[in-house]
Image (cartoon, one colour):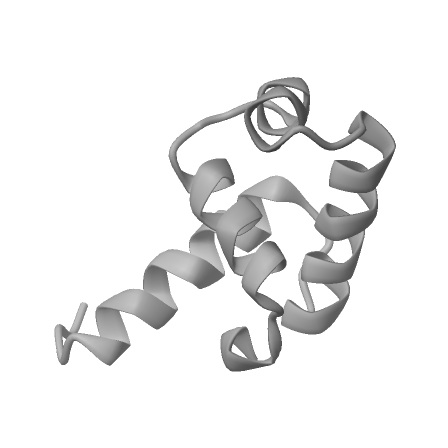
Length: 71
């Protein structure tokens, strides 16, 4: 699922996981807030998540699984 994210979506996901707000992401990347929100919506759709908490949880689990760490 995370492998379907575009490079920009992956970049935004990484910033989300580093606790950047949408406004901070927009400023850092030089894009509009609306564009960031569209990317966030697409990320949620592609990952099957509905909220920020669900997205972070799934990203953490996915990365732990990639590293071979079991919970």
